[in-house]
Image (cartoon, rainbow, N blue to C red; front, side, top):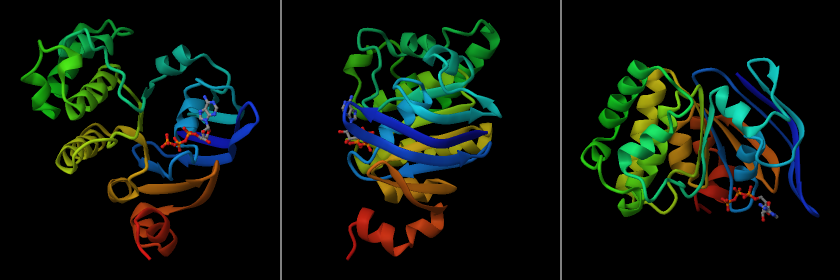
Length: 235
Ligand code: ATP
């Protein structure tokens, strides 16, 4: 579904991505794990065309490098950025409907709204509450809910666990699993928290200083000594 080949990104003199290459099959959950500053966010920004990039990104066989971010969203590649960025002065429901701004299938929109409320009952309890007054976990749920409202084909999540309590992280990761299982949604998950990301994903890629260091079945990587030492805090 997505083939990323030899991506290079420079921020001035900093060579942030160095030939990043990986692929995602339809229906998979793929995770990109790595420490602070490894290039995870930059990889998502490159796919979304938010940063100037050399290399190739193919989506269902079509070259999408160089397209505008809007065109990429229209194709169903939806990016939930780090830090959530919801509309703080809009209500929960208004935020969700903003996600559907490119759609005009009213029935489909209502169906997806019900689906989001079923997935995240906490949002349903807070439909009229302003986004800015939600807790961090609820804001993350809202950001994912808004992405669902845009009918994604590939959902890219940047550090959904960041700053959240373990119990809330579990709730959010259960929802991602459910989205993948019941809707067959393809997910690219970027995480510093390698443990939870590898438990959820099918395939893992480990990124270090802008390069893919190694890859494998996510469950195998969980038990890989290199991963355990570097990312799971073991000796
Ligand atoms: P984090 O988890 O901390 O967000 P990351 O793996 O997502 O880390 P990136 O944000 O992709 O890492 O950053 C990769 C490298 O590029 C880092 O060295 C970072 O300092 C640098 N970088 C990122 N954005 C910019 C920018 N706008 N200008 C200059 N350098 C940048």
